[in-house]
Image (cartoon, rainbow, N blue to C red):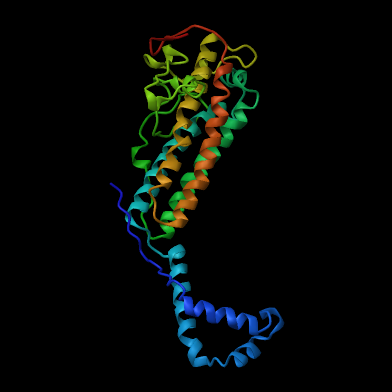
Length: 310
């Protein structure tokens, strides 16, 4: 459970009715402040420096207190926990999007797989590259912010032990996520197009039920599965279309995750960070939910995972 505590409280005293009346009389007797020099104004009021000093000191202390709320070195424990959770999420997203970018991004070599992604949208490779850059920047920023507050950064490299794709141009480094054996819930596609509400018990069928059964690969596992860029086979297209539905599945959580956690933080600065990153995550889902529906009909049997997609 995340707990929150108010670090400071500023109390403002209600104005005394008598003081209000006196203030009104003064405002009628003296010209507007913009027409009167500050020193002349104070002399005419007969207010000495000794009388003004306590008020000035109070205002100064209030300003310091308010300033401290925004730039204090250490964050509440609950805010730190939320930031670390989100940093871990972004690192996991960075890992899987990097794999997609290596094989289907704008800088990836032409292949049947990349051509299959283009069937979903002509700009698909660029979107993949952009989404990858976003997740990398989110993870880097959150970790840098934690460090700036004297907190430990999130590092998941020790868990990156899964083998990557064996495609020849893919870096043979350990990964956090396995995109070669996915079971993809595609009910998000129908849920976001339905007029019914899950809060009232509505349920939503899978757009592609076969993807929610068995294991399916969303990236080419070897050079032979890259396919002909000019004539991708149904098997290669099935891999690309699986990726297309997985894109939306990944990003659907971003539509609510940051907004939900933003309601739990204490620091105004952390709130601004969460709302800023959350907006881009929503745009990611908006992009991918529009593309998956362009998949063309096919039936394919995966000879490695022994699964069927149709």
